Image (cartoon, rainbow, N blue to C red; front, side, top):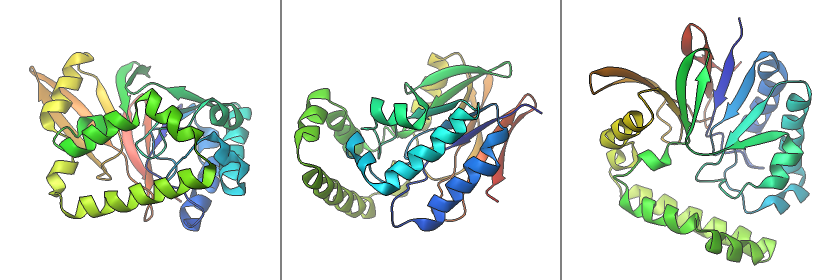
Length: 241
C-alpha cells in the first residue's frame, strides 16, 4: 500500500555510531519503498554551517540521503532547534527539499500539519527567547563568519549550558503547551498534526471547537527509536528493524 514515512530527533553525531548505522539501514531497507520521507528536524546533534560537509561523517549522511532521493523517493527536511543552520548546500548535496515550519499538506486525502514542535513549547519562556535570537538572520550571518573551530566551540558551550538549564526546569515546561497546540490546530483548519522535538512519542487527541484532532509525536533515536508510517488508513508508529 502507498505510504509516507516521518522521522525526527535522530541527533546524529560522530560519537553516535548505533543511531548513524540505524539511519543508513533505514534509508536502504525501509525508506526506499515509501512514497516520500519527511525529516522533521534535529537530524544532527548540532549543525554549525554547511561547511560541515567537508568532514567525512556529515558527508556520509548527506550521500545516503542523496542515494534515496536519486532512487526516486522524495525527501523533505524541516529545520529543528539543533540544525536550523542547515542551508542550500546541504539541501543540494543531500537531495532534500527544505520545508517551512509549519507546513500543511494533503496526505492521502487528509490535511496534515508538519512541525518540528519547539514553537509549541511556549511555557518554556527562556527557550523561546533564545530561539528568537538564534533565528535572527543577522545573528546567524555573524556566527557563520567565525572560523569553523570557533563555531564548534560555541556550539559545545551552548549545548553544555542547555543541559544545565534543563536540570532546573520542570519537565512539563519543556513539553508542548495545550493552548499553543489548540491555537495552531484552529489556525490551520483542524488538521492532523505530526511533530517531534519533545522526545515523548505518543498519539494524542485534542477536542478543538467541537472537532477532534489527532496529534502524533515522533520518537527520538537515542535508544532504539521508531518512525511513523502514514497511509490512506491512518498513521501508526513502527519500530526500527
